[in-house]
Image 1 (spheres, one colour):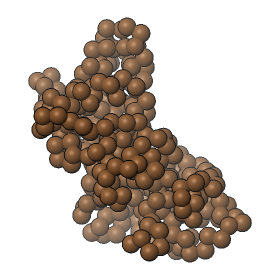
Image 2: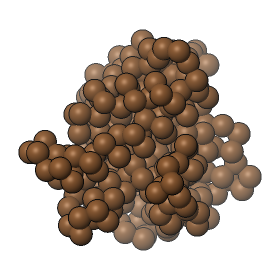
Image 3: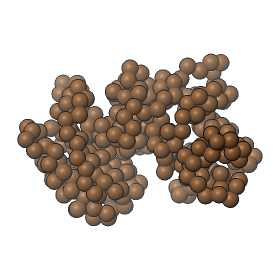
Image 4: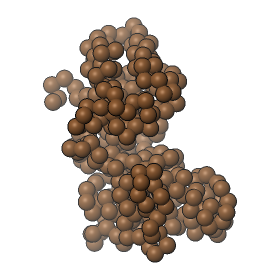
Length: 303
């Protein structure tokens, strides 16, 4: 049995998996906003509910969080749910649950889920991308999550857009305090902002793609710019990590034309005469986060 918990800004979801990945039970509750102790207790009570009637004593829990555990302090950093920041969340949660707890951010859990039994199944190296409100990624090599010594591996959204054109310099302001980060171009809001700058119209990212499909010339030009920017950004990753599979998740991943256009454009920028890297849509969709949390702990005897 495996236990996964997905702590989001609006909901907490708990999932019980069999060791073969079969879903046994799932349940969700609203997240107590900005109430640290309330979040700990909500997760405790939610797990008690999903484990009711099952022998889950001693089974460790994996938890995906909107942030990271600082390796230097043991406290949460960079969390969108700000009441977690500066707290020993893993220790407090383990005490409340009476079981070991392992934390990872949502992009890492997404990548792990898709590598274990999702769209990256069978690949030795997977770069799992979430492109939605923000832009993040996780790295899985040999079936294991690679987080890095500073727990920031995969934070490609906060590096500069590579090979910028003149009209892409210095780039939009990013909440991290810098300009021209990949996230400011590739996130859903980034795509919407680019279309608004060209047309004065405020529409969602998926609506830009729909307008382009209907023949809107301005929307098509916006999508061409977006695909070139994504290609440049992924080509940089290919030249550094060279993953077998790039798995796409998040709202923007539902724009189907990306899977035809972006891989071909990557060839111009990646340092190789021919690319065989696959770019595919996530198999588990919104469930990848909680499923990845459930895969954070290896099976007994697996190391």
